[in-house]
Image 1 (cartoon, helix red, strand yellow):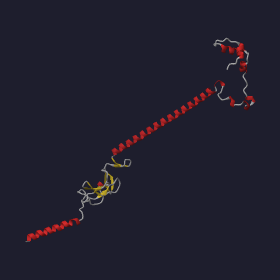
Image 2: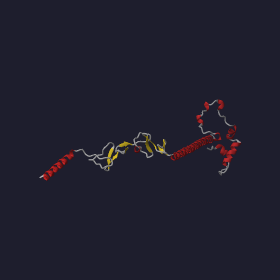
Image 3: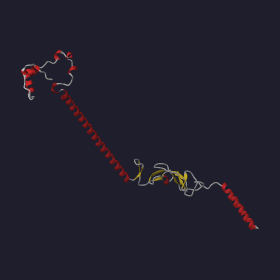
Image 4: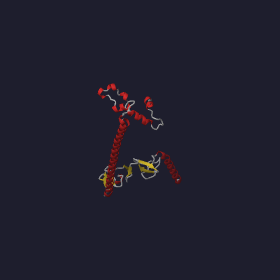
Length: 234
């Protein structure tokens, strides 16, 4: 019967088609469509992210479905979206600032005149602040330096005074006299005994008796000339 033959032919055709499916190349999804490990994305610089084909980092999608690299100011471009900043547009094959915006080298971005005015004011304020800080720092440094010098001079003066009054008070220097041998000194520079000192130490003189009598006062012992003249006190 013709109907039976037609059904058999359709069944054979379906069997052949199903058997040939593994031999066919895998389907390739477009940007924005579903994708998976078995259905990869088509085109260069595309990755499958969360089931969707997207351009890799640093690339943007064109209307024709291709991915183009992102561009900065004054770099070559093919369309506006390729310029990364919303204040940039593709003009004459290069990314340039849009209307009412101007490129600022200091901040490396497109700014308006108002923003530029604020930036210049901020830079000027920072410059003045830096100048004031440097001036204050120099003043503090100079003050500390002069204070240190004053303290050093005062210390030298006090040390000299202590050395003079501590070692050479009442004409008796602390330097050991045995180190200065009289034999090494010229005969004219040798120290001569003081006449008044010699008179004061002569036994039996009036000065010696007065000194011994004053020393005996307050001790409870009467002054006896013969005793004091024959006794040596240390």
